[in-house]
Image 1 (cartoon, rainbow, N blue to C red):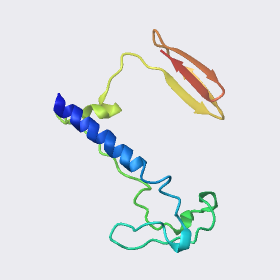
Image 2 (cartoon, rainbow, N blue to C red; image 1 turned 90 degrees about the vertical axis):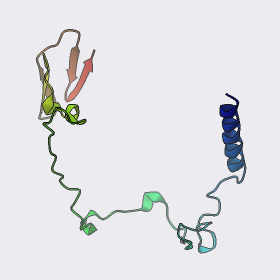
Image 3 (cartoon, rainbow, N blue to C red; image 1 turned 90 degrees about the horizontal axis):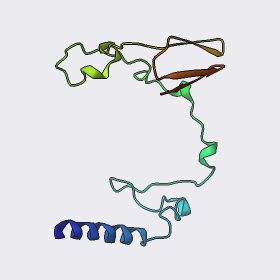
Image 4 (tube, rainbow, N blue to C red; image 1 turned 180 degrees about the vertical axis):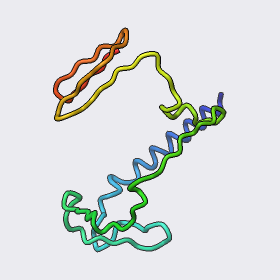
Amino acid sequence: MKRIQKIGIYAVCFCLCVACSADSPFDDWGENGTDGGTNPGGSSGSSDASGTLLDFDVSWEDIADNSYVEIAETIITDKNDDEYDDFIENSSFASSIQIAYANGSATVTGSVSGVTVSTNGAHVTVNL
């Protein structure tokens, strides 16, 4: 028990030392063309300190890597596999509620005891 208390005290002291070491670790960001410190690997960073994150644009046309566009998923059918229950295809349900979306509205069919479903346009609320 004393060992756990000592570890807790050391953790709190460490956090206090780190928290009290500077008013803000980002105060020097962008001053004199440096990022206020060094980057991993020992190289110095730099910033021209112009603009904000709101001024940052991403050009999706410049991205040539299409590896994230579509990833084929293999449904596990081996019941002994740890991830077998992670797939809805491997589940069965005694009752179900179907929700169909079309033209800005939702249509709900089916009912389950103890479950209420309400719609407002395409907004569907399910309460248990």
